[in-house]
Structures are given as C-alpha cells and as structure tokens.
Image (cartoon, rainbow, N blue to C red; front, side, top):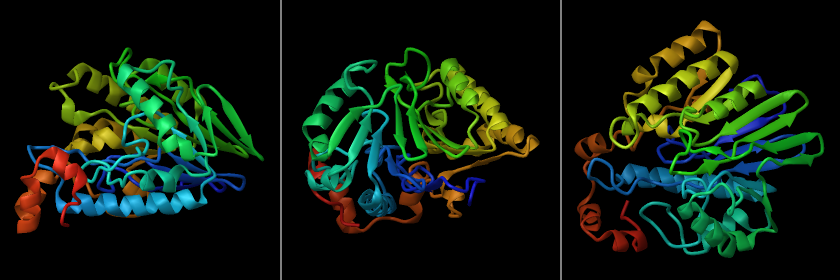
Length: 330
C-alpha cells in the first residue's frame, strides 16, 4: 500500500499482526535508510502456555527480515529499552530468539544508533538495560547518540525525536519512550511506539500537532484492562485514538492493542471515526497486504487445533532457564 507517501518508503518487519511482539519498521527516503526499534520478542507465558511452534516460526522469520534490513540501514533507532524494541547481546531462544552477541552484532555493527537517553527520564529497570546496551550490543555501533528532543538532517530528510513521553498514562511506572518523526519534501511519518493509545494528553497533543499523513502507533493494552491496567486508562487511550484517526489519513494501529483477539470490536468507535472522515486504520500486516496473524492472542486455540510434537512437549516441560538456552524443536 503506498499510503499516499511518494518518497517515504515504509516496511513493517515485525509486529503483533505478524505474529510477534514488536513494532520494528524499516523506513527509507531518497537520503537515508533507517531501522526503527530493532527488537522482537515472544511472551514466555500467556494463558499458562509457552509460545506455540507457529510463534517461534514467526519470530525466526522476523529475525531474518530485521537482519536483512539492518544490512541496508545506516541508522538504527531505540525508543526505549524494552526487549521487544532493541536486541540484547545474550542467548535467549524463549523470548527474543537471540544468539549470544551475534544477533545484536548483525543489527548494530557499523551503525549510527540514535537512542533514548539512558540516564534521564527513565525508570530503574530501563536505566540498567540502557547501561547494559552501551556495554554490549551498543559497542558494535559506529556511534551512539542521545536522540531526546533532537533533529538530525540527512540531505533533505529530517529525522526528529520528541521529548520523552509516557509509556502509557502520566507517571507510568513503565517510564518514558521517544516518538520519531521522519520528514521529506512535505511528507511526514510519525512512529509512536508504546504510548498505549495514547493515554497521556501531552502525547495526544504532540501527535495531532504534527499532522502526519501516516502514523504507526502502539494502541492501548485491552488484554490487561481491569487486571493490570485501570479500565479508565484503557477508555482514555481509545478516546484519544479516535481523535487521532480523525486527523491522520492513514493510521497503523499495532502492538499492545492486538493482544486481545476482540480488539476490533472493542475499538469499533475508533474505526467509525476513521471511516466517517474517509481515513484508514490498518494493522502492519494489512498495510503490507498480508493476512493478520494474531498468534499470541490465539495461543490457547493454537495448542488445541495444532498440537505440537512430542519433542516440543518435552521441551515445554523444561525449566525457563533451560528453555532460554535450548532452541525449541519446531
């Protein structure tokens, strides 16, 4: 889908609609090639079950796509330090599908990494991960540069970063993330990972003010409503998303929102607002012209309808520590 952008070329590489936890996206303009949030993960336990073999096949495929895009990219961005948004330098076949050092080296070696400040506006766990990234995966980069509130110029392309915005509602315990704005000759793409709606009014204001032709945004975590996230926050996130789709011609809605299999019904007001204004709201898979693969949301059903092999069942019974260091027999 051309999404009305002539010069800014966009390819989602990994996302919930592609079967994994991620928002990793490749962006190319006539001046620069950018890899946004080069991480991908699986949930180690959903519905009391580990990832299904189909999920492991999906993350393996996404890893290949990310590695291929990294060969072309000059810039890699890092909006925050969750492992579905950057790639760590340790072995983990359960959640991240990573070899020790080699997977991260493929992505970051020789790149300019524009990253979230690991010391300011950051919570404790991400501060630790940010420090670790600089010592491990980041050491392969040609250059590590703090991106918060900065603009980088590549020919006629501007790559701008927001001030740190909340990972969800104001004062979220999950900390802050950066949004990325890519501009070229009047075209504008905004990448808003993990803003969860957005739930925060300041984040909503920033996105609406930008008036992009194309937005990729992390929606509210519907699957956690009333459990780990206040239902009121979820509704605020959906309401704010309604306002956004009235402003933005093309919105790619991804990430947390798609972990609930009934997401489309729960977000029906968002779709109605988009259609009423002639705007479009899509998943990353739909943007690519592919079928949605909500594998995590369907995990329980996958195990019933597609029982794994005896070898896989044996692997399932191992400890989490063992599963991280032993590739599943898929």
